[in-house]
Image 1 (cartoon, rainbow, N blue to C red):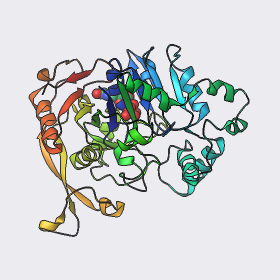
Image 2: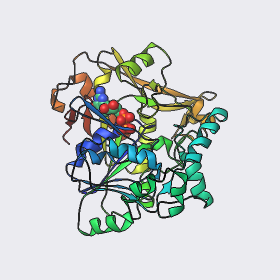
Image 3: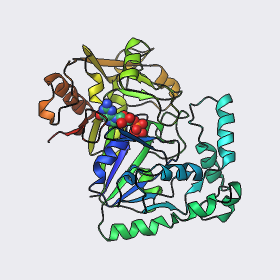
Image 4: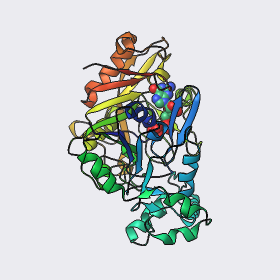
Length: 390
Ligand code: GDP
């Protein structure tokens, strides 16, 4: 079965670990968008691996890994990932139609961020995607890109470059299982995110098709949501906690960017955001990560609705995420309060073993977002993911 693992918040939902868990059943793992602005973390025992460009599937030797045409890739970041894999991996491929992030794109990104604060990871992504839209970008199939780097870089990278569309089409025809690894989150999507505080690519399910050139007719979409909310950089965040509680989530949840080390802003679970993203992506099942981080809190809150500050009565409720960030900034979330739990969840391996309050928290979210939660994360290690039966 083909699967897409897509973040349904503002990124950093823990997609790396979920992808890692599904990789055993996949033949091919594909990144369809973004580039070194992502940072997917996987723990194998105590060892931490952060991959920026190459799909997390590369941590499993023998799985074919592809960066599709929708990616924009810094060749140096790609080689750096390849050099940090625990075992040498011979099956990693980059689309010849993917755009090359050049040193000048990274320089420009850094300069722009000084003036125009968006919260960019400063990896050159938006200038590279801009050049793509302007039709002046260089792709891996254009040998001219080599002149922008040390002469050793071009031949080293070109060993991995292929027409990956053909490879993926053949995989589809052989009925192989393809796992699509989303980068960033749906709320950072260039069209459906909180524009302009977004990334420059399609992070939602449409990117699977546009960013690979194939059409998997059967595709299960797994939305990954953290049990609370985080966001890096600027932009509206209705359930943000700017107090000690936010600080506690940041410390206990180790909420510091895998790519930039920046502290992430933290807040309550926002079911309005997750419901919206589940609709945009046609999510079939949800993986709820980091439930263990909420242990010890007396009360947990979940935002189920947004109200407009200046209005009362029937029209005061936003029915969905407003299009303008100015409106979103003025939303007042309506919370439902649930009881917390004290038990350490990290050693639990069955959903049934969780404390009743933790089960209630998961089931409440499930009811509000209207999608089944099938997986629950209780720790950062590979094995710390529980399956919730239907
Ligand atoms: P991604 O970009 O969506 O892959 O997210 P990141 O990799 O940046 O961040 C996820 C972080 O949370 C990583 O350090 C993971 O090891 C960790 N993580 C993932 N799932 C869980 C979980 O269920 N519990 C805990 N405590 N950590 C988790």
